[in-house]
Structure formats: C-alpha cells, structure tokens
Length: 131
Image 1 (cartoon, rainbow, N blue to C red):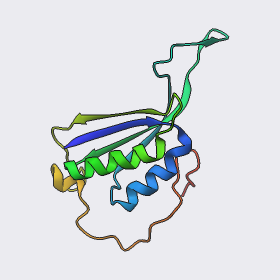
Image 2: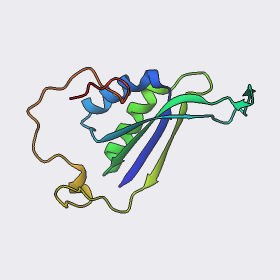
Image 3: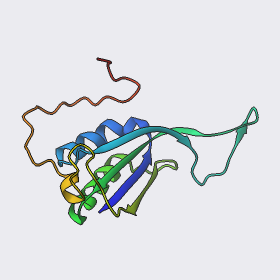
Image 4: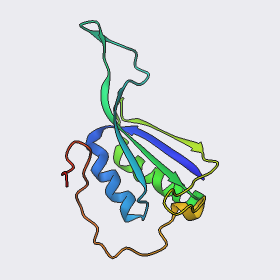
C-alpha cells in the first residue's frame, strides 16, 4: 500500500477528481495549501511570495491503481511552465477503517456497489453547501 500526495494548481482539481472517480479511485482528501517550489523566494512587502495550490492525498492498495492514479493526476496537471506542482509516493504500513475495524486492503475497498449516480460537479471546502 502507498500514499500518493500531489500538490498542484487549483484550477486542475475538478478534472483530476473526475478522472480518478471514473477509474473507481474515490477515497481522496483535498486540502487548500500555499507554498513555493524551487524557484527561490521573492519578497513583497516583507512577506514571502507563496502561491495557493491544492494538496490531494490518496491511499492506494496496489501497483495497478497507483499507476492509474498517478496518470490521472499527471494528465491534468502537467504543463510546460514552472509551478505545475509535485507528486510523491510514500509507503503505508497499515490502514484501518474506523467504523468497521477492517484492515489494510479491505479497508480501502468498497465491497458493495453504490446505487448513487456520479455527479460531474465536485465541491471543495470553499463551495460545499451546508446541510
């Protein structure tokens, strides 16, 4: 099992999520972040020049899904300019689904097919309607 962490431009998020979900990779965490890459720090008004991005975290159970997830991210975030983002893979030793106590690969899978339809719109913390 591995964790894929990717930091990239926010405008790519919906396309990345859509393709991940089409490939049945649904367990994702998205966080708004700011930071900088390896271009150096430029200061404006005594504040470092940091850029808004999103960080996507996915825990994957096997190499096939790892390759698929990385290609989904890469295909929608890769461009010719600097600052497209970074992606890295970290080993995961153990996973547990808190609700049921399932461990490792069984905690990452969805054993019962969902009857819900998939939406083409994804919400983020900024635009999620409250209930």
